[in-house]
Image (tube, one colour):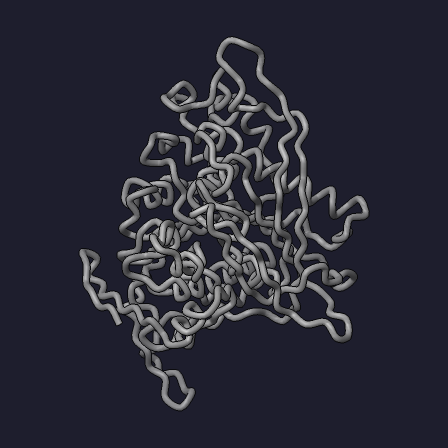
Length: 438
């Protein structure tokens, strides 16, 4: 157990539970629920199916091969996605999918084990399920947030996680491609899922496209904030490292094309350590353009996206949206999102890439469980309009100040501990809420 106190006056207690250690020591399970996990972290009632598809956007500008002098190069941009969905199991079918995932060290492939069944029959004819899009960081891949993808699918969501071309572990290119393409990729995948839903695809008629949520981590959060209505500051269009020919202008608040390009089907954002505020991509006035409800998640020691002048600054400036900010005290940029360090990396001679998945203070399984809990509560509330979820979100801000007072199942008047959290397990967490001003 690690114990420490910081400038927030919060003491962090991180338990490296036997179940987590045993699981990570032997195999890369993405479905581990620790004994101190909050109640909504566990899997839901639906069996989970999974399929891999490739969607191609013909007519995208090829940022990497376009120069300042010549006309823009146009190409077909293909994006591989992993789709998790509520499923029906046939007699004799068993859950337990293995995913072969390239790691942060591209020479190493990890075998991840979850609770899905590949090519399972979709649960069609029951109800329509909201869509969740998952957008990874730079670099990353579609499996980085796979614990969340499977988990949400088991609770009645169709989840699509993107491999962003030029931004994965195996094909990482200059970040100018990510600057330009990330908002476009997210919207293109929503369009593609809409076509799959309406044109006889395997999920035909199954997706509630008008209630779409987007989860974005790091550069995925960068693209998400833009798609929520946070147009970029026009000063970045010609800044160092920007795409050629002022291509970023179409993502800028003051550009007439920007608002018209946003997708009104996005009804909820879940922004994990969104990158860009410290680097001048937004002014406060730009972020005032966000009206979509958003849940932000960050580590208070994030030196990549920044905390006070980064994620918290976005949270505070998005004044026209209802929003939450969950802070993992003393965590860094990897708060919440990545699955634990793959055993294949731990077994390698140099362990190159291990720090991409780990946090110096917090246990990954615990962080994943907490994130799954709040993502479930938030999307259920906003996309499914389940008001019973409100009690998991409207809590006293500092988890360490909660009073746990239950005796033999009876709750005393003094009890105000975070709903769904076992006694003592909310320490090190801060959850804040700000209302829209209009």
